[in-house]
Length: 329
Image (cartoon, rainbow, N blue to C red; front, side, top):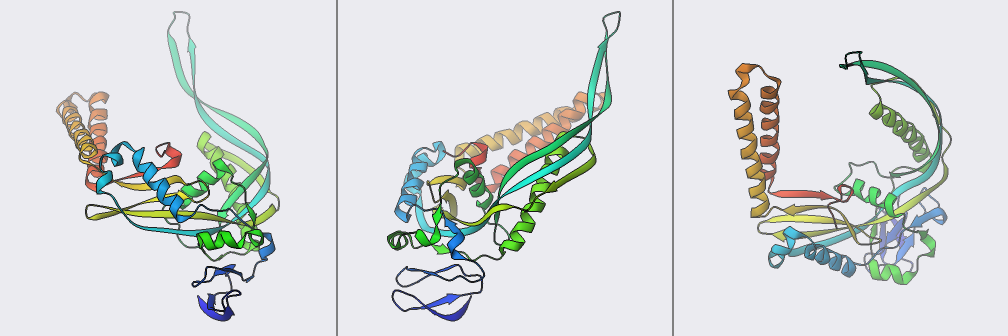
């Protein structure tokens, strides 16, 4: 960021800003100075956040409710708690059109002797598309960090209320003092990206349920109600032994959305046991491979895959948990 001669409206301290800066939070007094840059701050929405103490409490509550972490609670040490506001473009896109696709399906019939015969047939379908999508996409171009996608997923589930950035009370900033990351995509770019993303979502939906798309004629209208939304994201870093792990929390409700966790001896034993079972299954398949049975081939492949997966997990020394898989409390 380049220093552009801006000073804090409250204490007069120098501020560092760039052309994309929305709000420059004074590093001395924590006052939010509104810097328009290429955006109109009047239309920017912000989701209020819990403060650092509340996030710390959420972390220890999570430890108490986690079967593995609770056992090693006394050996965990919080190293740092970091938070920031990340910018996202939010808008509604209307998509419409027609999709024709082919799907292979099994068709069975019973003959006069009571024997069932099955064969694969290709069936063709045509479906109309006509729906509104609410999209949320990052306003920054850099590679996404751990937990960002999970934060967006949690937002789509909870839909927390936001308020205008300019309406946020000064006391809230003094309590939280979160950095606001700069935007790197303007509204024009965001609108173009939303239209492309909406069409891609429809295409991927049909790719998932078909064997071949034969005609894809889907269009997206100009996005409506486009606003820049600032979402709070907190990360708690903690030490266990000689390693550092972290948990990502949604700032508006203190929900853990993604985490890396130490693997205790019981969990590592489970993975090693799985690896051993995989080796035995693969060995059994190899021993019976001469029979050329499909069972022997499946045993070799399945056993090798199980051994590789569980063995690699044991070597990682940590677990990764995400909210959308239903594993975070």
